[in-house]
Image 1 (cartoon, rainbow over the protein chains, first blue to last red):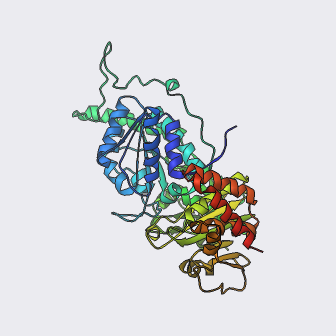
Image 2: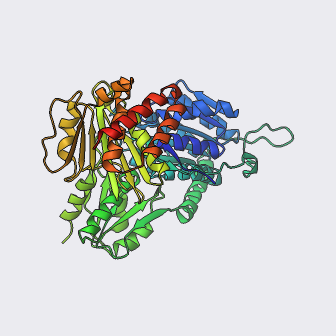
Image 3: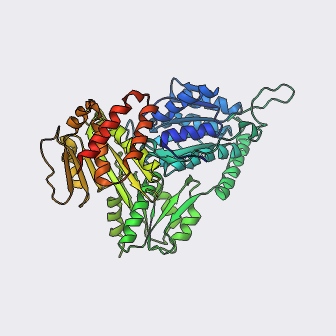
Length: 351
Length: 179
């Protein structure tokens, strides 16, 4: 029987990537995701797979482009400033319809910021970041075990939709340890074939992978095809979790680390007779607009709590519109909201 | 029930490792656990700390406003965290380095010369394990033999197998120092 092991979030993401059949990993070190790169450095060569500590973040994402075009599962990881550098490459991946997994262990920003946990890269992850009309699927794990599960899922979704997928974590999730049951490894040989990959054109027509079309009609068709794929993703891949929302008068909307802190707040509030629930997007793109819209017509208040100045809040307000009050509580610069701090905010908005 | 412990001291006193072993022992004992290190600038020369939560239920917040216990290995740690320990909680102070007692009257206070206890078994650097032993006795959170095994495993997997015997002695010394 599988045994629980105590591991850091960063290590679990790395190990899950290995078990998902990631053949090539490229990255440049940065805190607070260093343990992810270290786990890959220790294990990828031993497994006969490719580990490259690139000369820069831009080089790493470009190596991911190449590996993905060659048809293998591939990943890069970094933290906020490093992800900014990768944005050009992510746009190229999206434009080329190339699957890849990108991990952002978010830290305080903007600029060099600091190395403390933050959620201030939500806009960058969900609304673009790179140029052009593209989206990534963005998965926001809340616990260390879930970070592993969503990393496995990220590779699957990337291949299925030929799109970059981001794991949006934060410094706290990366650094903390929790027991996990590691997922069973997938058999790389059993994965669906990639007939589009540039694997050598002997005996067939060449596969050409480009994010480039000088002819506006051609580029328009490429964009329409991307948009059609995004529609399918919006229809099929929205994921969220609700906790104690059945009888709730007020719900917290939060993702990632803040959502798990909010779970403690739900218990504390309930012990005091406050009917508090939690709405947690697991995919922050596509955002669970419909489930939140449905919930918002049953509650008085949807309180968004984030480690940002109110980035996910915009999506919450789009979903809720005028159906409920939509106050906001955010902490900035790497400060993590505590259970008591969140409960204080909840109390300001009930009764 | 949910127990939360802040282990704090100077960098190099082994608070991070003591916390890892506590978390590992908690998991081996069948509990849900989280281990959260301070990894910011305080790691560089100042005070280091980690927070361990042990619970029968899945752990929500890994950060705690009011820990049920504090292990203060130096004075800055006692000064910083004494005020936030929950009323009725436990504070364990390393009197080898801290020249004051616990000022609060609404907590259980244990004042133990951890450096001296570790030195007594010939392993002065094992004061973190003495602290862990004392916490286990004071809290009753996890049986001593579970922690002993977790510690042995942790040290061996970090290539420090040679230090197991001394650390086990320090763990037991700390455990037995609590009445």
